[in-house]
Length: 159
Image 1 (cartoon, rainbow, N blue to C red):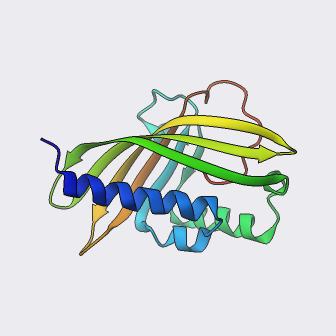
Image 2 (cartoon, helix red, strand yellow; image 1 turned 45 degrees about the vertical axis):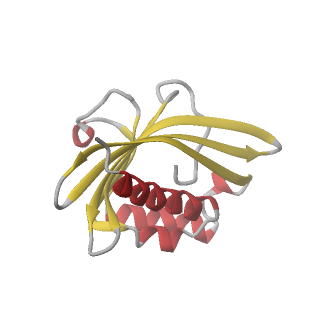
């Protein structure tokens, strides 16, 4: 049986994260992460050995900070023509629950508008969240883009 209270809590946390990214609240987004957390966008959506394979992103804390600094500084040329992103999240499922962690999988539909063209990036997203006193921190976020092994135009924002 699913713990609906826990499901509601993780759904709210992940929805807030998506809102922060869509509204470019990148510094607040950094605060959602544990110090050892890893943000991963694999090229092969079936890959599980992320540390030993090529990924679009494999960001630990320092790389996440550098990515955010680049986005906020205007140096990320690929984001200068992106008017807006919108994330839709659905199909939340708790995969694992322990005293210290909870793992959750959901679907994400990210839309971007660039040069007046609307593009969509559907993905399965898996989170490993550390339980804190009354909230969570992200320990791992894996974004498996549906079309990750096809040609992707430059994605300069955080998925």
